[in-house]
Image (cartoon, rainbow, N blue to C red; front, top):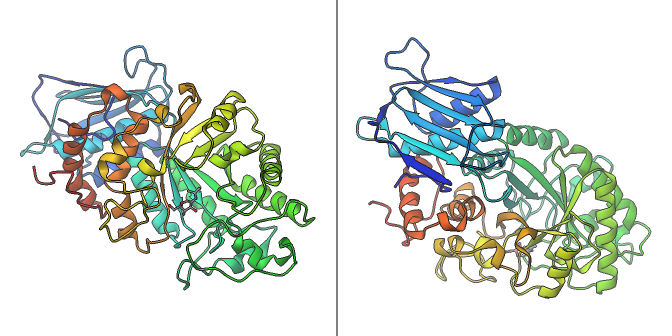
Length: 480
Ligand code: TNX
């Protein structure tokens, strides 16, 4: 069993003997791909070399249509061939070559005692295009260095989307040039204490870092609830015009905007406009979750207005599932999260109106849930999410009656109320993010829990070598 996560569409072992790789010479169509390959392969312990080194093996990355599983025209498809006469990756688009490199990097964990790679042909393409992680950098502040470490992890699992939850009751984490006071709401987090803020330059640099790894940043400005950081510094947003107190607890649902307040629409326009202008990706997330103190009519007006402003800026809006309570235009994305939350009929109606769903069911994909009742970190409102719970679920079966083609993809989510350090964060992400990545990538008939457990154990040394903490769940035999 090759140690690949997510499991590819088609893996063909060759009878060829294992391929010794005393050194790899990377031949790529451009410098950016050469850099990506060098970074990923050397991190995996594969030595890079130039043509003069003895026994050097060529890794040739080539753009070409003739790639991927038989009959596939998926733009992300690729073929990776590891053979005695060299290693070749072929894909119609650059992203497919990056996927091939990630696969090769994981194969490094299957080297034999002499350091030789198994001979293999992998033909692969993903099930869904939207394969993501939603990451809360508000409840506890995780800055650019941590976010880059998360980008690296996300990219290594062939995920394409990093959704950053940037605003909430406790803090505001992104510079908004038209609303400079918001920076004053950045120095707070759960439990109080020093926190931080991404400047526009930080944000742009992060986007570039992610884009070089084929990851798109999706920013979230959460409204009309989860806004206490904003109402704390812009008191005019409140009904009485007075600033609210700073908040460092973990309750949800109490803060809100007021649709009829004349200060509200200009605030939405300023924030969404600035966020859209600094965002390269096609999407802006406008939240919409857990507004427990608003009638549905007023809420629906917020959904309509926020979506309209996002579209005016040429972006596609994404809401949490509650967005289904408002009018939805075709192409709007709804992120499903709360299995107990919403009337299923509303989702089916939204899909009929053209909405598409990103599946983040709390009981499977929320990686801030405790693994077990005894687990020291995490919450448990959606139950406990052991590795197998994160693995054994089917995105098209999450919402009864939803047409399968209304599923845009899958996103894991990690909320940080209880997570304060990078190791704590990673111990919640790993190994479960691999499980969700496989749900997003691998077709149901290619998934297998027993094989996934074995592959997870085989990748663990690579995580350790890369400095990534993980939770040694007893569901995996780590030393087999
Ligand atoms: C629900 S998910 C929330 C977040 C919390 C999370 C904790 C969602 C749209 N809202 O505000 O952080 O649960 O698991």
